[in-house]
Length: 470
Ligand code: BYC
Ligand code: FE
Ligand code: FE
Image (cartoon, rainbow, N blue to C red; front, side, top):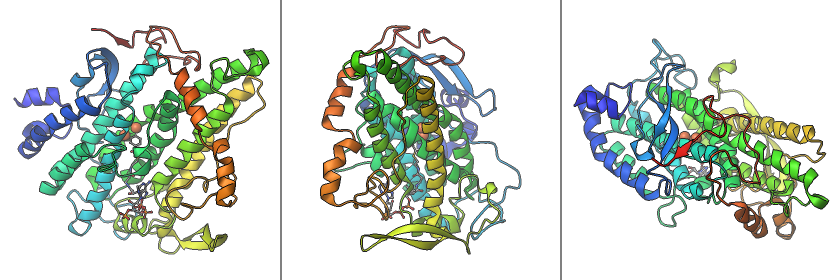
């Protein structure tokens, strides 16, 4: 029985001898599979998909590749191995031994962080569930499903923590994670971007580029956590996350590449007429998903963030890069909106932790945009892509609800409305992209609006049979 269990659920948490966890999972697993069947990827469940499965945490042994049916995917539980003598790296408890059990005084805060993190994972699967029907290639189809099964595993990772460390209310929260639904009016997912529709593959590339990248920064911040099981769980999740961001960053780059080709080939340079995505439209999708994803960092000025940091639960990106880990005396200069005017203010550093994390995120996004611009440059195209200003189109924090243009200049409502369709995807854009979403499910072929990748997955060529009928 226990050997069977380890075979079914690969893990490094000694599941076969943990009766309590087994019982909790026994209850939860059928509900998880029902959820996957209900709102996981539509179609393709009986196909063989070339997927990687995490079967150990060894640096070069964890990614096992092979054709499997998604419902047979072995969702596992992996934590980075424990580091002997690890201490808390920041906040009020700096230098004390890392917690192996939940510290009572921080229990609610910690549970809330874990639930918020856990909620995003199934949400993204729900958002992406219809994309298989319009995949531009088998390579892309496979990448979509890879991302989906791994987000499923990330849900498992948070459920493991809830089941193991939070008793009855942890089990209830774990059920709740399967009950909320992306975009549902009555029981929506917790964070804004995870209730936004992902309607087409440009949305998908933008989401994996910008929204999964929020995941990277949040996971790095939680990988510093003084609660050691959370830190170790997030560290391992980050190894999988890299591929999701790769799918997004190279996905956008492949669209840009194809657009540049069409700009030169198409008669009178009309990319839209030639069946491509015009650069201005790509820019509007960048503007949308970048701003939605910035909101995921929370308010610029946040007492929650200060509390998380003080408690030693959520640190900064690579905390070791900083000299000083209490962040009690520092401040952060911020432009704050006061009576409709921007005023420079010094904000106590702990309260500005969301903004500190967002800074690193924005730099990382800019690096990717620079790369896309090099693609344009190599193709001899003079136009450039850009990130909108961080104040543009915000719905959380101090700039929320106030219109700013893409350079961060304040506008009145009429000014915003006049420009809205220049900056964000319009109904016409959506209709154009939708018309391009003709599926290409034939081996080695690719849709006309996106370039093929420069290489395939795990050393295989692009025309490998990434998804096949069994
Ligand atoms: N939408 O103090 P504030 C990933 C709420 S992505 C809706 O400004 P705080 C993934 C907030 O909850 C990574 N509500 O913010 C990616 C609070 O509510 P209450 C996910 C929001 O708390 C792709 C109020 O506004 N991980 O893994 O400092 C695919 C004031 O909050 C939003 C995490 O997020 C929003 N965008 O920061 C798959 C890590 N922002 O108290 C997966 C855990 C804020 O008034 N979460 N609010 O009811 C956190 O660390 C924090 O909760 C947040 C928010 C950074 C999200
Ligand atoms: Fe994830
Ligand atoms: Fe991800």
